[in-house]
Length: 341
Image (cartoon, rainbow, N blue to C red):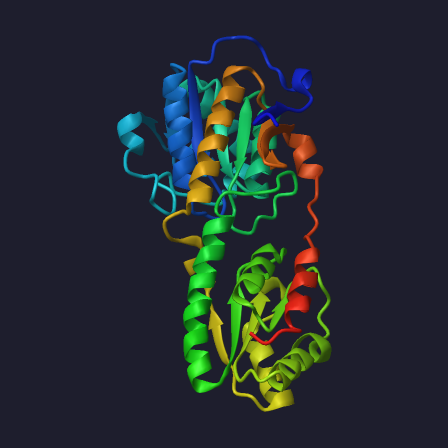
């Protein structure tokens, strides 16, 4: 299978003018691997003889002119760093027509022939608005929730999963020692990818996700009872934040079963840390592809992964696409309850 495929190639192709200078920004929630993506964009651009400008604080940087020239020294030793050296912010100003006009003026003043925007759906909505003003934009999906509809994978997901698994494994040690129930809340306001993946990886007693309506008696109480009948004396409940409050889930467990759960909200710890090999490798491939697309005039698109390959999807089309949770993972989780862990 080829590693790069261009969807609707002619419709993506812009003018054949030479690309001399591009900008790169990170926007929305930070995700491990964003720095690796920035590094890939800068180094790929330099390899093509293209100048690169770093734009600080996402779309705000274009609105208020917060930028600096980038070279190989700018991205040295950032491959393993979490967060983003370009900082990130959500821009209310960019949501207005006046703000977008100011952003366009910055692009013209800098002589940018294109912009690489790294982030999630909110970032790509901004990219679409800027592209409608005539700026060539390519998006790179980076969010720990893995909830961007047009791509199978987003940068940061694997690292966030590994961070959550490491934390839960440590919690399990103390829960087992004291024969307790632990309720752990992970990120995922609108999507349960992280919770389900982590729950399966740690052998959770139950996993609560926003995509599946909660039946507390069946999904929590009965799961704990079955686990106890199999001889287990400690229980792990993983909750996606969009499926309910871990604190409230803990209270209900205490009221209905009499256990005294310990509640842990992992919160923003999941966003931090050194990116895994998978996130670094994916960031490198996506960053290179984004620059290559701009150079070849195949912009106004999102870099996506499908079936192991890299593809480009037009921004408007990408934003209309949805991704459904792979519920076979939930079936596997249920099957695991038949075996004592």
